[in-house]
Length: 142
Image (cartoon, rainbow, N blue to C red):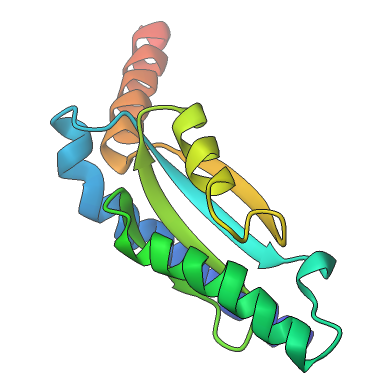
């Protein structure tokens, strides 16, 4: 069962990454944003309620407002929650690492979710770099 969950998680990350990177490549090329970030979050032990009252309070004061904020944020290109889990992912366009830090820290659930933020590079940018390397290798052989 754990293997199936891991496979599903990896597949979702790949899909979100592909959709987000493809859908924002035009705005990146136009210079509208400087970077994309893959943001993963998962409830930590502070987010594990000890009873129904605490569960309602955590949901009402932290989780629901955070999910609403994420769903309304125009900088978030794509993302969602892992089905049946207290975890999710999204891709956000931002001008700096600080901008992403501020976005995440401003969420009411910041302290009850663990965060992993990974900067991404666009397919077009990486393609250009790889082409230059191929040219350098071929030029060195001559």
